[in-house]
Amino acid sequence: MKQVLITGATSGIGEQLAIDYAKSGWQVFACGRNQAKLNELASQHQGISTFRFDVTDADAVKDAARLLSGQIDLLILNAGNCEYIDDPMRFDGSLFERIIKVNLISLGYCLEHYLPKIRKGGQLAIVSSSAAFLPFPRATAYGTTKAGASYLAKTLSIELARYNIDVSLVNPGFVKTPLTDKNGFEMPMRVSVDYASNAIIKGLEKRKREIHFPTKFTYILKLLAALPDPIWRYIANKMVRAQQAHS
Ligand SMILES: NC(=O)c1ccc[n+]([C@@H]2O[C@H](COP(=O)([O-])OP(=O)(O)OC[C@H]3O[C@@H](n4cnc5c(N)ncnc54)[C@H](OP(=O)(O)O)[C@@H]3O)[C@@H](O)[C@H]2O)c1
Image (cartoon, rainbow, N blue to C red; front, side, top):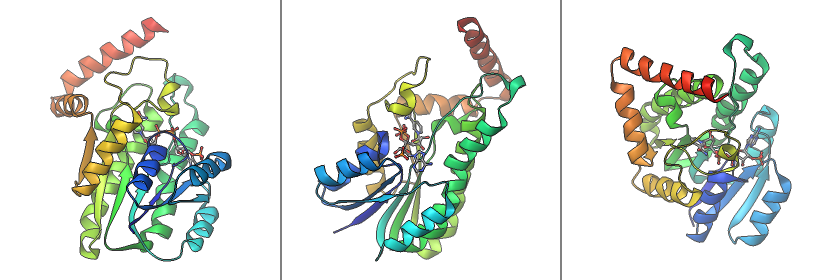
């Protein structure tokens, strides 16, 4: 039986991944803070065991890892959050710190304690975001963390090759989850968690270095990112003006 550990498995993309891997016969270690949701996952799905810890708490991450005996085939670092900085002139330093802790610092804690648990020939997936492709207004904190997560995944993919561990960087577009339900703006080509989970599982099966979806959306962003800076600036300035008019 193959084993996968998923952080952020109590909601959205991570929850769907946990359910889908369990349905396919994997042993799933689902992680999160929401105990009620963890209980629900374990009681309603065969093959799901749970670990409750806060990914921003180094000791809690370490303690939970100690409880995991044996090795895993796949580690999916997916836990994360998004908050926006609406006014750069009133830069919210504590929001910035909060988002960096949950989306980036936590990756270091998890890698320290769970990377050695991946068996030879196993896989690591880091869930970043297509927001890392380009600088998006208001995503100052979120985009910074996801740019960092993407760099981390790409570097590890080179460094871990000699340990026979494949690394996949996951860059979703918009996915309908509680995280994006909070957004008060239009989200082009937003997909369901089923779509996201299916794309991630298929990509991981193929050991893709980058998994991005929906591709119609992500290729447009990749194309924009490849354009000369003045063109992107023109588009970004239009976005800022549209947002200002909206608010
Ligand atoms: N939805 C999108 O459109 C989208 C697009 C691109 C990238 N992403 C990325 O995909 C990942 C999952 O997002 P989602 O949309 O599925 O969000 P979500 O529904 O809000 O789920 C977030 C998950 O992260 C966990 N989490 C948050 N803070 C945590 C903490 N301090 N300690 C432990 N677990 C924590 C939550 O669990 P608890 O509350 O139980 O702790 C929850 O299971 C995130 O990294 C996000 O940035 C999402």
